[in-house]
Length: 278
Length: 278
Image (cartoon, rainbow over all chains, first blue to last red; front, side, top):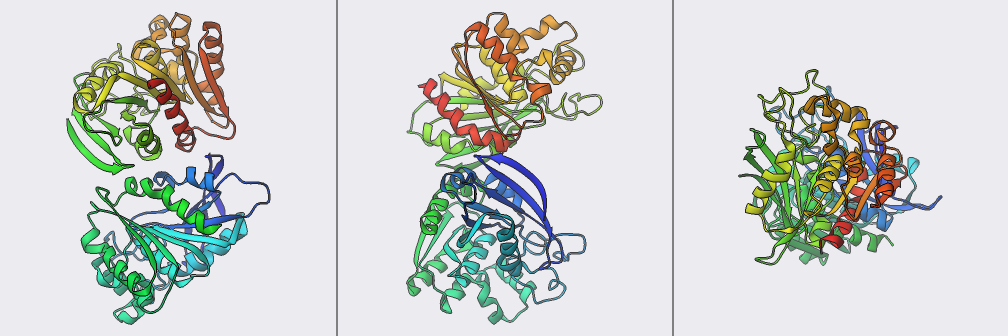
């Protein structure tokens, strides 16, 4: 693991790192904020999964998470959203919603994506092991959040590992990719046309199929241009109600899909996580 | 004035605007954050001047000022750092520290810069009038802050208009441009070789020449790569001590020159401003 940069911030260190990933077969870059802490302490860790077109850098620069992480003693990890490199196949038409910057947190089974697009394994296995090796994390206290496509990732990974993640939240998540254009395109491309294989990568389907967590927190901007067609949080609302999951779904009037929205509610989410991380 | 973008953030609106500037003879872009406020209220305004290579966008995206401005009821205005456009003369060698992105908040008297490089007039006259016309500001409650070259701008403008600005602070400012390479290059280029003309654009010289304000707040990163050669806050410290100006000069160990440093201490500065803005 190579350190790309390290900057003191809010009493801790914001770092950016690069390593050769065996999961994706590429170099991968990620950021980690380590708050001020006592020598030898092991800290809870919050995973943040980013949305379409993003890298680790968007939330690292615009997420405004460091003040709260410093106050609450949380390590904040932000992976990239896809493998990258000249040899990595992209969307055939170069679209923003598939391929580079759009890994959708799945392990692809379709050619030509199967070799590199293994973001599920990367985020749930390889990167956690690397983080545990190099940073002072308490692996028994982890939580996960994300934005848009990363909200989809946070929900599906959180619902799949309910013992690992003590808290799960999302900003404007894609809650039911099987039922919206972004998700249908991505899941077809990475997983093929058999919709049964999509169910473990669809938060609503996971809940329908029995996945349970005590609580979820979702903030959704009311002026989000993707709300009606791609995000549709009401589908998650109905699934959680039926399953008895305590979903706090907050529609935030006037907010859009940007980091101006995310940063506004970031500290709130981190406090909600911290309360559940102990 | 044209609105380029508007995003809801922390209950208020982060806007970006463009207008044809008579001071610079170019279009100029700036950002304004208006916090949540009662209908008809007039709010204090904080001016933020940016550093070399920056536009309005750097602090707008990375400054982490909105949470505190929303809490404290402060309007936050961030101008660009120079005129821009194909017809605007740049540094002859394309260097980052002169010309585009490096206006140094002076009105140039030297050719070929005299026509466009009028950032002093722009920031002290034209833009304040535009802001007063379009935003709910209380012009009797203004303060100014800045970073690096913008710290130089905040100090020189604040010291020149002590009745207008109730608070003046800076992050890693160029305190004595006449005595450091960045400043010597810029002031020679914009104002010519007569160093007497530089004195009203040098915070330390202004204080030596009698400018007085009750207090100044300066944060300086101890690991700032520009500290020893370009910033030299100790020169300001000596001038303030001699002049009886209450300078709070805080050396922050481990911090560099970046927005990771600025964002860490931004809320602190805004509270210091708010206390003086009433």
